[in-house]
Amino acid sequence: MTLIAPPFTRSQRAFERASKVLPGGVNSPVRSCQAVDADPIFIDHADGAFMWDVDQNRYIDYVGSWGPMILGHRHPRVLEALEDALEHGTSFGAPSIAEIELAELIVSSVPSIEMVRLVSSGTEATMSAIRLARAFTKRDMVIKFDGCYHGHADSFLIKAGSGLQTLGISSSPGVPEELAKLTVSLPFNDIDALKAAFKEHDKKIAAIILEPIIGNAGLILPKDGYLEAMRELATKHGALLIFDEVMTGFRVALGGAQQLYKIKPDLTTLGKIIGGGLPVGAYGGRRDIMEMIAPLGSVYQAGTLSGNPLAMAAGTAQLRMLQIPHSYEQLEHRTQRLADGLTELIQKSKVVAQVANVTGMICLFFNKDKVTDLASAQKCDTKKFAKFWQALRDRGIYWPPSQFEAAFISLEHSKQDIDDTLKAVEETLKVI
Figure 1 (cartoon, one colour):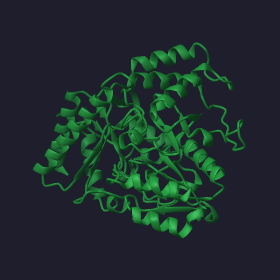
Figure 2 (cartoon, rainbow, N blue to C red; figure 1 turned 180 degrees about the vertical axis):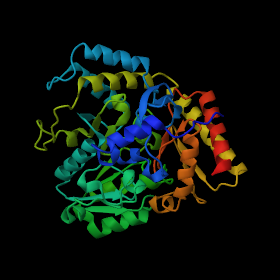
Figure 3 (cartoon, rainbow, N blue to C red; figure 1 turned 90 degrees about the vertical axis):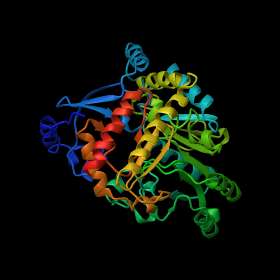
C-alpha cells in the first residue's frame, strides 16, 4: 500500500492561518486532532466514500461528516434535490411544502413519533426536548448517562462524551452549579443505579435522556433487557423517556435504535442524516406532549432557519433513498465485513483490542476487556490509538481522530474499499 508522505504542507499552512482567527484553529474541538497528537487535515473535496485534502491526498472516509453521509458524499439524488431547491431560494422565514414532506417521512418511519418539530441542530433538538419534558411533567430534574453526548447545552455538559472525553474534560466551566444540580449522571448499562436514582429523587425527575446506542464514547451497545427495564421505570415513576437518536436515527435502521430494540420512547431527537449533510435537527414524539409547543401550546421554541428549504430538500431526498428495499441489509453486510476483518486481524496480531459494531457504525477499542460503559472505555490505551490513527492516515484511511468516537460506514463503501482498509489496518498493527 502506498504511503502518503508527510508533511501535509498545505494543511499545515491552513492550520497556521486558521489558528489566528479560530480558537484552536477549528470550529469543533474533535477536529483539532489533539487527541491523536496530530494537526488537523484540511479537506478540499469529497465524493462517494472518499475525501481529498488540500494537499490532494486521497482517503477512504470513515467519518462521513460524523454520520450524515450514509449515502456517501455528493450523492446524485441529494445534489439534484439541492439544485432544484436553489432555484426557488435559500431561506424564506415562512412555511414551505418541503417542511411537510420531510416531517411526513420522519413520522411514517420512526415508530414513536406522531408529531415533529424541525430545528437547525442536534443540540437545539435535545435542549428543546428537555424544556418540553420539564413543562409536561412539571418537574425539573433530568437523568442522563456517563459518556452520552447530547450537544453542548448547559444541562448536558455533566460527564458527557464526544469532545469532552477526547480532550479529557469531564464538564465545562460556565455551567452554573444550580443548573448542574438538576442533572443526575449515571453509569450506562447499570439498571440498579437508575432504580436507586428514582428511589432518591422520584417525583422530581422530569425525564431520562440517553443515546440508546452510545456513539460518543466509542460505540457502546445496551445490554439485553436494559432499555426495556428503563422504559418500565420511566412509566412507573411518571418520567418521560427521551431517546437521543441524532446519531442512530435512520442509520442503524430506518426507524432508528428504537426500531432495532423495539422500545417506544416518549420523545426522540434526530439530526445528521435527516439533513442529507446540511445543518438540521428535529424532536418529536407523542402527540399530547408535542401539542404543548408554541404556537399550539405555551412551551416556547423558535428558529429563523428551522425548516430551511435546502436542508429539507437534501434530507427528503436522502430518506427516500434509504427507503429502497434492502438498503439496510446492504449496510449491515458492509459493516459486518469490516468488523469481521478487524477482529481476525487483531487475533493474528500482538495488539490488544476489541471491536464493537452495529449497522453502519463501528469502533476499535484498544482495551483488553469488552467496553460496556464510560468507565471501561476510559481504560483504553489512547496513546496506542493515536499511533493507530496516524498510521492509518499515512495509508490513506481517514478514521475518527478520537478513541471516543464511532466510525461510520456508508452505502458507497465498496467491498474493495473495505478490503483496502483491512490491508491498511494489517500493516498498521505491525508498526504501532
